[in-house]
Each structure stands twice: as C-alpha cells, then as structure tokens.
Amino acid sequence: MTRSVDHALRAAIQTLTAAGIEEAATDARHLLAHALGVGRDRLLLIGPDAMPLAAQARLDRALTRRIAREPVTRIIGHRSFWGRDFIVTPDVLDPRADTETVIATALDGPVPRRLLDLGTGSGAIAVTLLAECPAARATATDISPAALIVAEQNARNLGVADRLELVLSDWFSAITGPFDLILSNPPYIAAHEIPTLAPEVRLHDPAIALSPGGDGLEPYRIIARQAPLHLAKEGRVIVEIGWQQGADVSAIFRAAGWRDLRLIRDMEGRDRVICARDFADPAEMTRNYG
Image (cartoon, rainbow, N blue to C red; front, top):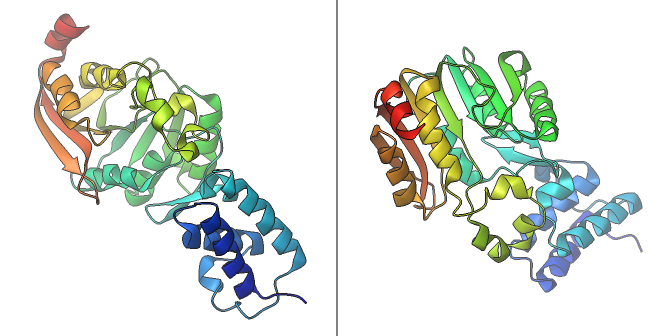
C-alpha cells in the first residue's frame, strides 16, 4: 500500500529520533521537502498525497546520510542566511546563524561604498551586504580557489556579481585599499578544541576554515595589525569571534593601537563580534608591529 507524504514525514522523524538526532523533526522536514523538490511550506498542503516512490528513495538516502551525522545543509546543498539561499559545498564553511550578527553590526552604521571580506568562503557576508547595500562594491578574498568558485556562484545567483571582485589572497597579501568596511569570519578554533567539535562540524567543514592552528587567535593578530593600512578614514573593522574569545581578541586589537572597540553579543546573548574603529597612526603601527 502506498503511504502518504504525512506518513513518510512521521517515519522520517522517528528514524532520526531513534538515531539520536536532536532536531529530528526540523531535519526530517528539510530532507522530505528536498526529496520531493518542494518548499517546506508545501508539506502541510500535500500531506495527504501519495509519497512518490522515487522521492521516498531520495528521502531514504538522505536519512542515511543524516544518521551518519552529515549536516542537512550538506545533504540538500544550500543554507538560508539573512533570508537568502546560499549554495554550500564541501569546499566552504557552512554559514551559521551566529554570523548574521556580523551583518547586523555592519548595517548598524554608515553604508559602505567599498567593503572587504577576508576569507569569504561561500561569500555569505560579502554577497549579503551587497544585496542589502545596492550602491556598495566589494572585494572578497580566500586562499581556496574552490571556495572562490562557490562565492562567485552565490553572487551570480543573488544578482550582485557585477559589484563583487573575488581575489585569491592570503589575508591582505594581494589587496589594495582603501575600504570603508573590513569584515571577516576567520578560522578561530584552537587546535586542541578540534577533537571536541560535533561530527557535523569536525568531519564536514573544511579544516582550514575552522582552525588556524595554535591558540586560534593568529588571524586576529594579522587583521588588527594590517587592517589600518587598508582602511579609509573613519572606517570600521568587524570580525566574528568565538564566544569565549572576547577578552583575548579585544586585547589583541588594543595592543595593535585600536582605541574604539565594541563587543557585540549574538541572539543567544554570547560574545560574537568585535567592531573596531579609531586606530593609531599606521606608520607608527608598522614600526611597532610590522
């Protein structure tokens, strides 16, 4: 007897729950909608309909992957970020809701004419800000050519590719400014923390996008030291941080000569972003920290 879409959903939830998946109901809806090729908002409407055999086969394969702790976004190939869909591949970090705090902070200030996104990955930060700021132009960098291809695809899909320059660069090495806004969600996980990460992260996000090695803070030292050489007058630097890194990253920026720092919390009330302005003379900083 052919079962209904509703029945397939209930069975999928039970399967994921039995496997210990915490967000079993949410994940099951995502995977079922993907298998059917419909939006999640359609599932309620088509619930009584017969579940196509081909869609059931796709759902079964997706459930097997999820039980193996592959993230839903990796299975369906895209992630919602700031209300837009972004392609996600194994070559890029899966954009998290935490990073939307970077977007909110950027938009809570002067509209940038030119912005720089360091370590762009999927392009989520740069592409979102270009979509939100139609007069802006952006440069986005990454050391991964494969990541830049994904960022270009997302820029094209969201209609901002004509205002985005993608550059293969190790931080600022191939960059010239000035920029009104410099942003980054850098790799910041300390090397000793990697084994403790959830399998969805540890096994599926690119290692180079998770950790720079050591104490996880080296990208902030580079950005704090070099950003003033690429920043326009009265420009801002906005970086995402780990929720326990607020004091350490603030100290790094202060030691590099930054005088105006804001520590911003995410929707869960955790330290998530540092916004820096007003730095010492770049020539003096180069002599002290170069």
